[in-house]
Length: 196
Ligand SMILES: [Zn+2]
Ligand SMILES: [Zn+2]
Image (cartoon, rainbow, N blue to C red; front, side, top):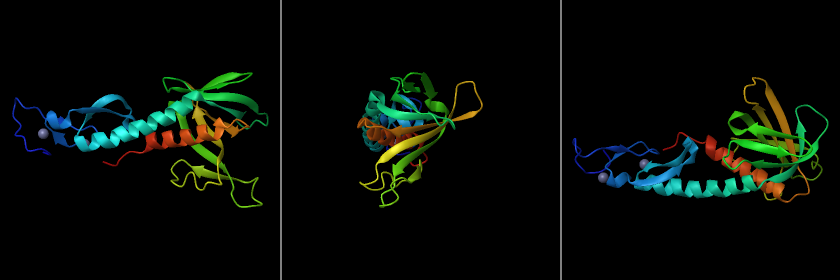
């Protein structure tokens, strides 16, 4: 028990949804969104955890705003040589990436299996070589000089079992790199788990 209160049939115990420890009602009264575990609606937190989750939720909100605002990319589906300029934005309920150009399609966020951020290589002479930064690599953005230049997604369409690839490269649009950085940060937050 994490607080000194004596529990009996009248005094109920509650678990903090973040650290799992038991508290009385008063000590676990804060309700905060816990996005990383997909509790988008506020859930019960102990005092310590509520501060951490609130900070995370604020940060996550900021990334989501950027993602929903969208950016313009040069989009190459699958192994195709042809690319198309499209706007990409996250739908307001966070379920799909909506790509909109001459054609239009959706990528279900829950069906994205891998995500690689492409960055321009920083060293001179390597400028046309892309380095792949995996989602779990914590060194992103590596340096000021290496800005995200694109993203490669692998995903499955709803009710399909074959994996599709999608490549998006930044264009002149300044919102592109910011969108990619937000995508990376938001995805990383969603994936991280296991710590108290
Ligand atoms: Zn807690
Ligand atoms: Zn208590």
